[in-house]
Image (cartoon, rainbow, N blue to C red; front, side, top):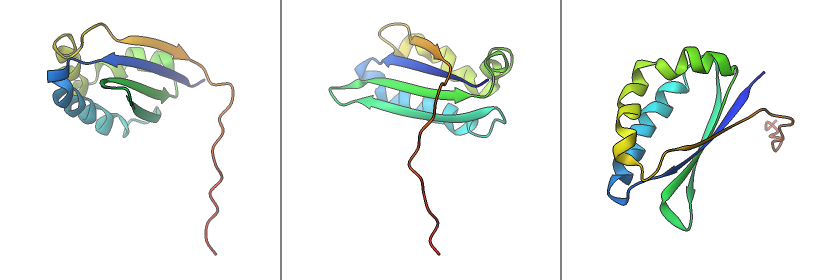
Length: 107
């Protein structure tokens, strides 16, 4: 069963550019993983230093055992204490329903 992680970040103002650069590298790499489903990064319209990451993976245990240990995550994990004003707020969710707008191919 797939699992979705919702992760909130409060970033130090002087570290926002670095935060986004390191996270972009991780997101660009993880999209090629077989168990990756999707990810969406959100910015708080009221606070340019608050972000919310919504990512879904096929299997929670595989994330724990394999994905969190990928080499492309090393610089990201090591930098987090310098980037953030507080620890990440991480919650885990399992989907009950997925809805999306239908896209029809042109004839």
